[in-house]
Length: 216
Image (cartoon, rainbow, N blue to C red; front, side, top):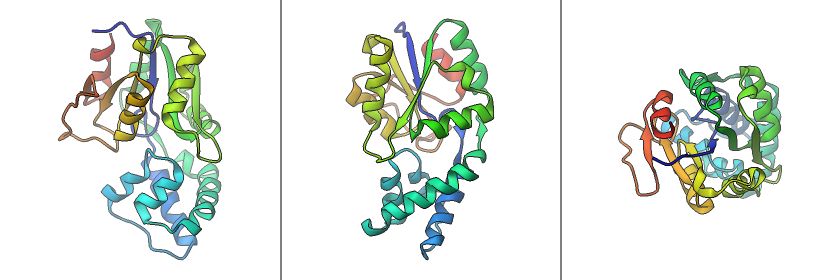
């Protein structure tokens, strides 16, 4: 087992169940555009992970001409109310506490804006566990691999001593591009109990507590 120093967490689907706020806000947005909502959970799950414009294309097949307006509507509604429709996955806080107490550096890499994630973490009283929180930019051009590289460089830690924990192929691909290890979790939105360990994963955690068995 490797002796990691920097543990980077994805946010949605890894630390928190934010799906009610995300799904409700996304469906509200398309209704404002005069389009139909999506009720299928598997389809809605595509909205979690990628950049926001990609989310609207993947989930609703939204026309390019509507993407900017959709993103603006979504961000305004999510900041006002959607961000508070969230809860911590059972066991996550205990995992964070144990890792912090044992001296690991904890960070978050997300495709949300940093300010929104910080606000949500404050709402959930989780800010205290993290030394660095980073997200995408307002243009949506900052991708997850870039965010991971910036976090690793910020702490000046070797990539072999760093790991990303996440729940989607989007997370895995970003870790591969950034050349850091990846631990999957299957209790979130992307992976499920049928997901098999791939060559790009060190394993799959079925509960937050299982994360500790791969790190400690």
